[in-house]
Amino acid sequence: SFQSFFTSFGFNLPKDEEQVGMKDQIVIKFSHVVAENTPKGLAANRFAQLVDEYTDHRVKIEVYPNQSLYSDQEEIEALQENKVQMIAPTASKITSISKKWMLLDLPYVFPTDAALQEALNGEVGEELLKQLNSIDIEGLAFWSNNYKQITSSKPVRHPSDFAGKHFRIMPSAVLESQFKQFGASTSVLEFNETFKSLEIKETDSQENTISNIYSKKLYEVQKYLTISDHGYLGYVVMINEQFWNKLPLDIQQQIQQAMDDTTKWLWIKSNELNQEQLREIQQKSNIDIYTLSEEEKKEWMDEMTVIYPEFESTIGTELMTKMEKIRE
Ligand code: LMR
Image 1 (cartoon, helix red, strand yellow):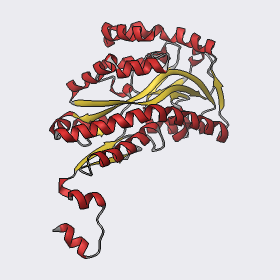
Image 2 (cartoon, rainbow, N blue to C red):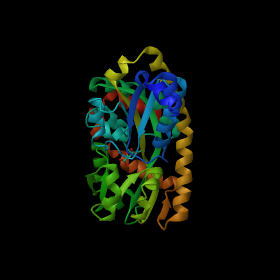
Image 3 (cartoon, rainbow, N blue to C red):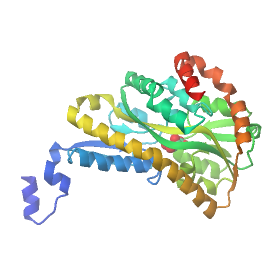
C-alpha cells in the first residue's frame, strides 16, 4: 500500500494518516478573514483540535486565516458553492441575504452581557439560525468577539461628532443608517482593505472591536479611540447545508460537541483577549483613548436607538418584541 511503501523507506506519516488512511479522512476547509490571535482565529484553531480529538482523526478541519482563500465579500458564495465547507462571518455580512440578521447590528441592542447571552442562546438566536436554511446554510453556533469601539482621525465624544466623517463600514443597512443619522458618510470595504483605506485617507474613521483594531494595527493609522461599546460584533459559524446533511450522524454529533465546547470557551476568552489587547494598544501606541462615562453611554444610547423603527418591519415585529423583553 501507499502507506507501507513510504514507511518502508523510513518516512513517518503523520499520526492521523496512519490511523485513518488518507482516503477515509473527511477534510473540511474552514476559511476566515481575521488574524490568528483574535477571538475567531483562536476559536477556529481550537475547534480544529477538538474535532481531531473527538472524531479520532476521522475529520480534519483545515483552517485558512487572514483571507488566504477568500475575502469577506467572497466567502459566503464560496460556502454556498461548497468551495469551502465552513466560514464564520460577522452577522452584519449576511444581512443583505438574510435580512432579519439586521437585529444584531442595531446600536446598543444588547445593553448587558446577560442580554446578549439570553438572546443568542435562546429563541432569538434559534430563529436567526433557522433563517439560514433557506439559503443552503446550516448555522452551528454564535461565536463572540466583543463590542465595537470607534476610531477616527478626530475626537469622537458624542454621536454628533460623527458629522462630516467618512466611516469604513461592513455591508449592513443598519450600520449605514447609524452613521448617516448623524451626518457621516460611509464606504463598505472589505475588512482587510480597512488599514490601507485609513492610511491613504480615503476614509477617516471606522468601528471595530479592540481585537480587530489591535491585530490589524488600525491604531497606527488613527489618532482617536473612543470606548463606546455601541454595537456588538459577533460571528455565526456556518457549514454548507448539503455537505452537513451528508455527514454520518455520529460525525455530526462529534463536530457539534467540538463546536459547543469551543463556543463556551470563547465567551470567556474573547473578553479576556479584548481587555489584554486594549492594554497593549495603550502601551505601544500614541492613540488617544477616551472611555465614555456611564452617563455619556446613556446619552449615546438614547440618541442612536432612534434608528430602530426604520428596521422594525424588515426584522419583524416578533423578533423585535422578543428583543425588547430581553432588554427590559
Ligand atoms: C470587519 O469586517 O470589520 C469584521 O467583520 C472582521 C471580522 O471578521 O471580525
